[in-house]
Image (tube, helix red, strand yellow):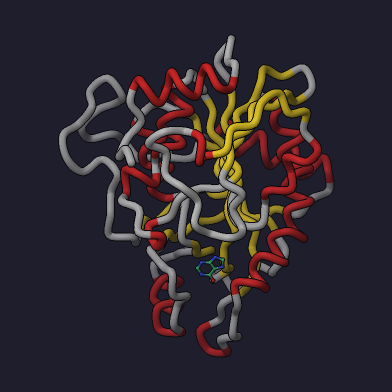
Length: 274
Ligand code: HPA
C-alpha cells in the first residue's frame, strides 16, 4: 500500500474514471452518508480494491469506491464513498490519500462530511453542524516528515481551515431549504472507543461542539495542498457528561442515514453554486 498518491496512482485513476476535464469538486462521504450518491448520475465507478496501492475500507458502513458523477450543469464531481481512519490502523498520510489525490486530479473544492456526536448541550441529535473550526486531538499530523514543496508550505496557515465563503454559502442554502444547521468546532479523535464522561467534559471545556473519528487530518492535508474546504457533520448522538447515554455504532449509522437526507439536500443546493 502507498502512503501518499504517486503519479502511477493518479494516472491509473484518471484513465479508469475516463477523466477528461478535472473534477471541480470532491466530496468525502462519511459513515452512513453514502446514499446521497444514489440520486446522482454516475459517469464512472471505481472500487478502491481496483486501484493498486490504494487503502481499503475495512468499515462495514463505508462502500469503498470512487464515483465520478454529474450534478446538473456543474462540472463532474468526484465522490469518495468511504474514507480511511486512524482506528483502522492507517497512518495519518494514508488517511489523507483521497483528498490529496482529488487535489492532484485538479479539484479545487473539497466537501468533507461525517457522523459526529454532539457535545454542545444545546445541539440536538439529528441536526446538521457546519464545521467552522477544528481541534485535532488525534496526536497525529499528516504533514509530519519531509515537506512536499510542490503541494504546499512547510508551515501552512490554519487560521481559516474551513473556507468562510463556503460556510456562508452553506448557511444560505440551508436557510433557503428550511434545514436547521448548527455551526461549531469539530473535535477529531483517534477512536475507536467512544468517549468517557470525563473525556467528553474535557473536550467540551476545550470549546468543542461535536466529536468524531475523522476529518481533521484530511482537512489539514487539504488546506496544505490548497483546497477550499467545506465541512458538515451529521449529529448522530449526544454526549452529556453528567448523564451519558450508551451509544452503539448501529444507532450512529441509523441516525446518520436519517440525517443524511438533509445533508444531501444541502449538498444538492451548494454544489451548483460552487
Ligand atoms: N464520538 C466519537 N465519534 C463519533 C461519535 C461520538 O460520540 N458519534 C459519531 N462518531
